[in-house]
Length: 79
Image 1: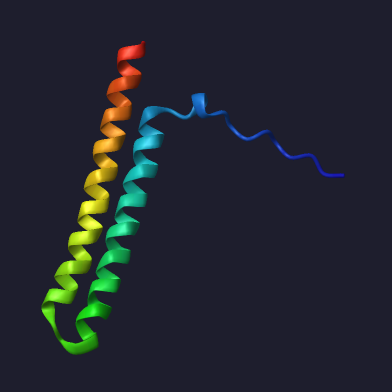
Image 2: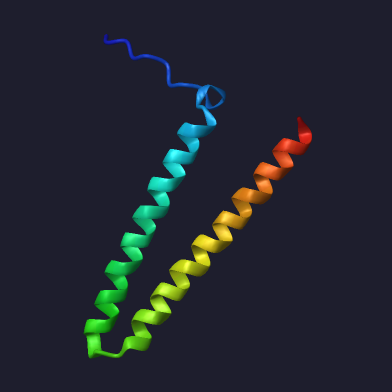
């Protein structure tokens, strides 16, 4: 039976590693949003459809960034 290494604990990941992962996730969500905005625009060439999609993606990312900042601030206060 093969043995697998234990997964790294969350404490072992450095802040830079976590920031890098979050940055890549944000980039992927932006690309995903652009892809869907182009698809919404090509549906009937209405630019407001693309604007709505991009606004929703931006709102989601903004809310997520605020929640991450609030969490980080709370964690820093506990230390």
